[in-house]
Image 1 (cartoon, helix red, strand yellow):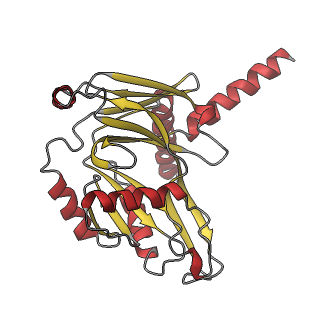
Image 2: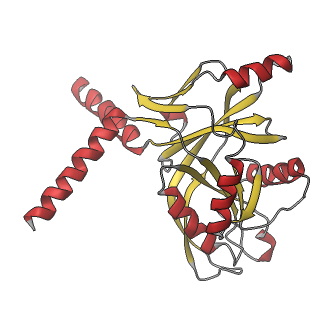
Image 3: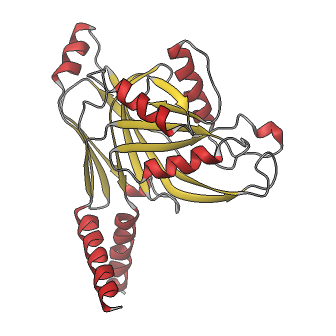
Length: 274
C-alpha cells in the first residue's frame, strides 16, 4: 500500500513538473485525421483505435466528426460543417472523390479505412518517403496566459516559396481540442450506445502563412478555452484550406492545467484586492 502511494506521488510530481514547464517540442511521424460520425455503425471501432493513437506521442491523432449520416435519424452532436468541407477538399485534391466514414487521412496525402490499424501504419510509412512531410519542427508552449507557437526555419520550404514567387507556401492552423468526450447516442445506427471520442477538433483558427522562415504566434488561452477545451493542436500544411496538401508539421499540447492555473492565480489576485 505504501509503495503504491509513493508511486502515485511520483506520478503527480512528474505531471506537475511537466505542467509547470508547459511546452511541447514535437517531432511526430504523422498527422492522423479521422472523419467519423455518430450515425455510422462502422465508426465505433475506428473511434476506439483513434484513442489508442491519441495516447501515442509519436503521432498527432485528431477526430473530425461530420454530418454525413445525420439524415438517418440522429444528428451528430460534435459535427462541424468545416470538417465535411475539409474531407471533400481532400478528395478533390487526390482526384478520387472518395468520401466515407470512418475515413482516416494520413499526413494530408492518402486515406485508408479508419478502423484498419495495419493500413494506417502502412500509410504512415508510405507518406514518410516524402521528405517534406512532417519536416518542419513545431514547438508549443504556455506561459503567462498565452499559447505560443514557434516554427523553425526550413530551407527547403524557403526555396520552393521563392521559386514560386509566393509570399507563403503553407498555412498554419490552430485547433482547440476536447481530449475525450463520451456521447450517449439516442437514435440511428448507433442508438443506445455510448461512444467516447478522442482529441475532438472544436474549431479551426488560421494563425497565418509559413514560407520557411522562423515564425512565432502568441494566442491568449482565454480565446481558446470555452469550458470544455483542454488541449490544442497546430497543423502546418502546404496549400490552402480549399486545396490542402501535404502536412509539413504538427504538434499537440494539453492546456487544461495551464488554464486552471491561470484562473486560480486570477482568483487569488482578486481575493488579495478584497
